[in-house]
Image (cartoon, rainbow, N blue to C red; front, side, top):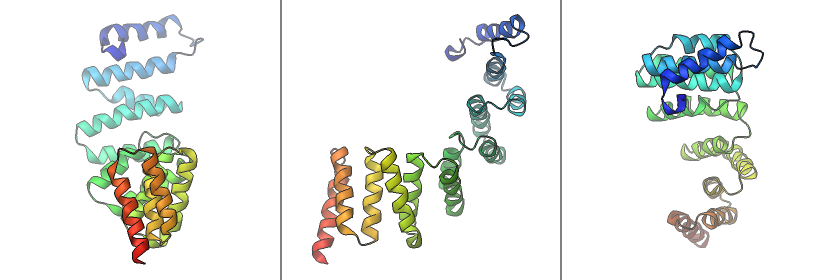
Length: 219
C-alpha cells in the first residue's frame, strides 16, 4: 500500500501489526515503525518520527532508507546545513551504505569545491573499497584535476574497478586516459579499444584511439 501511496490503508496496516504482535515475536516492529515514519514525512511533512527511528534503531538496511527520506526532505527544503550534516552522520552510522556519498559528491561538485570532492572520494575509497563506480569516479577526478603525483594510484583504482566490473566501458576509458597522461601509449590504446569494443556506439572512444595512435606516430 505504501508504495502505491495508499497512505491511510498502509498506516492502519502497520498499526495493526504493532497491536497484534505487541511482543514483536514475528520481528516486524522495526519495519513497521519505519513505514509509519515514512507515512508521516510523506503525508504531513513531519520529520520527527523518522528522526526518532534513526536514533532508536540500528539495522543498516532500514537506517539507509530512513536517512534517504530525511535527506530528500532537507534537499527539498533547500536546508543545505542540515543536508550536509545528515550526510556526514549517515556515513558515520552506516559507512558501508551508499546512501550519502553520492549526494555529498554531487553537492561539492556543483559548487566546484575540489578539496571536499577529494576528501569525500577518500571516504568512499576507505569505506566502499569494492564499489567499482566510486573507484572509477575517484580515478577520473584525479585525471581531470591533473594530479600527476596521484596518477599511479588512479591507475590502480581503475584496474581494480575493471576487475570488479570488466564490462564497464567508462572505467576502461578512464584507464586509457591515465595511461595516455603517463606516456604509456600502447596501454592507453589497448584500454580505449576495450572501451570501444564494449560500447561501439560511443564515437568518442574511436576518436580517442585515433588521437592516441597519432601521438605515437608524432613521437
